[in-house]
View 1 (tube, rainbow, N blue to C red):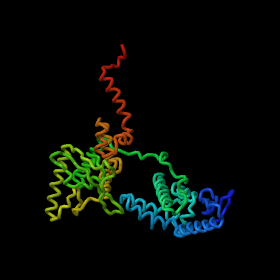
View 2: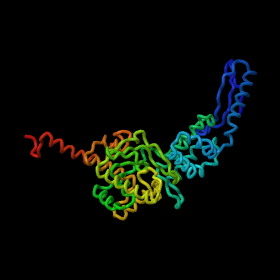
View 3: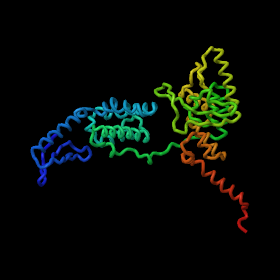
View 4: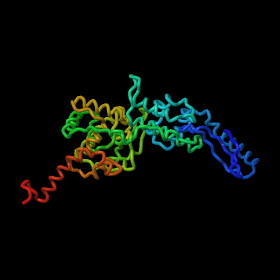
Length: 384
């Protein structure tokens, strides 16, 4: 970096040139008071310029890709959940590195980020599938977070990604969950009867637990006498490998009451599983739901089983997660208090449950209006 001495009135200043502003293109200079002695001011300017050069030597040739893969991403492994970190790594490798990986980190420009986002939202190659706005927003947040950390480490003066225009969260349409009616759910459970995964599918439909929570259940979590199920852990697939998690939110660890039929289904499955393990001389894994080899059921496997059974039954195809949505929707329509539904689902607050299932409320409001008029003895004859 260059440094020189400037004089204002009777005082000298060491002026350090630090390059161009990546946003405005203007030169960046910092002024340091150096007293009334020009010789001392000259020494200060040389020292400060040398300090800046030393500080930037490591980043002068550092590419954005090298920074992400060798510094930023390894550091995030300490603070992020395994599934979140894997998602970051996948987005960096698939979308960020091919476009910006070779660009020196100090030469990144706003226009490069916006061009990347545009290419992902509206690809010109007919063979390339456009990404969802939510995914592009996540890419933008990864870039912005990585460069913010670079600024905090003193590697950059400014985070140019902050002013880049990416998809806005408010403009991203929410996913409209597709749910089954009570009759459709009944038809699905009837079609699933006799399948090895029937007990798992029944519990998922009748409790609304997440897929990871369902597959992470151990027999010690089931209290047959009290008819309760304790949610303490989950199984998630990261790169197809199974990893145990401790729950999605702080409210994920909870106790769910079971209906008598669900208790009977679990009792029957436990007896069948025990007999199978004895016949095959398998060591019990302790998990409630197991595959034919005695190990835990893979999340992808049960989702595929769920879809196959739904197709054979001629039902609308929904995601496995939509069994949870179906349970919540039918519960709310059945006049179960929202707070109870929220507790069973493990939501952070009842307000989140209301916001998620507000599409169910309009019909319930009409029923509530009629019910209230019935309470106060109103009739269709009008006021008298």
